Length: 457
Image (cartoon, rainbow, N blue to C red; front, side, top):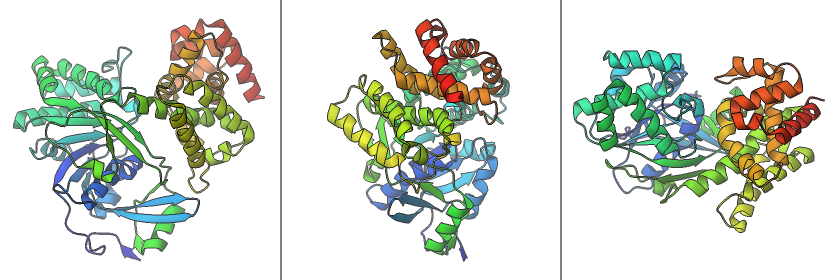
């Protein structure tokens, strides 16, 4: 079995770096890096390379770096497996490599910064700005004020990179968040400008005049890669790839915003540029991500561990259909568009060759539910409706918290403590933390409590 590198794979030298990425995870490699690879392969403008930096796992860069930035995407559908060698990564680095990160941000030929750091990684406060009470972010702020850029959080690393770009007079830049946040461009802008102002007001002014924040909607299911997956790639390709990514055939990337320093021709790879991503964002967050959260929290009560198992269960499918009916009432899209998207989701969810673990989806519920479930729930309650799907999603989350094990959330300790004890008390306390007004809705509290008892039974 041959080691994977550019010489063995007969791949030309890496393209010059035009994009910086923060968060070297599987989704980025199946999505933004894949779109860049496809755009390069289609020709047109000068090829674009990506310098990618790790986030929470500094060791994630090593196997990719050892392979000269190469890796395979393993695309799985009902008919079988296909592999594609992705060549757009020019470099993969430890996010703590400050010198490398700053040099890359400061390069005039770099025009875009993309991010995949998860919802929790943006470290927002209640007002939407940077959470300066967050211990890690507060420590990073002290370092930034002292001129020490050895910072650890994603917002601080982005801000330190922008400081380096301003110092180098390297020109404007576009920042492109690719996480499931409502209005993710303006949302990230508020965090970055707020943190920049906490460092230096003049720097915040520079950011506002030189940095654009592009809004996006992203979609491609990317389960965790297993040793068996690596063996499949080795068998199909003849290469001992240590960093393949497993994904589905479906992919979507919708973007809206300005790129003042240019960008790769991502539309050649299938990306879509629009004036407003809002309708696409809501469709994806409510229908796909909302159903995922519902299954992740309520599905285990039926003994399921993956999305494919859960959606094939008629009971779980009924839960999802109820949720989709509720969400569809509030989407600014045609009935035909929504019906097609729902049919596509059923096909994607039921793909037995994509092992999308419910436990993986269940992470960071306190960050996800406010944007996946609560917008629909709030609209339904305003119309006097007690939505079955929304109630079940909240009850499932409470059941998940009350188990106490494998709760991975920035507020895990607080949540599991609040969820303990009697059902009525647990429901009120957890809902109050999620959104205070929910705990004052007596009918909602009663309904969530009844469904929680059903799930726990």
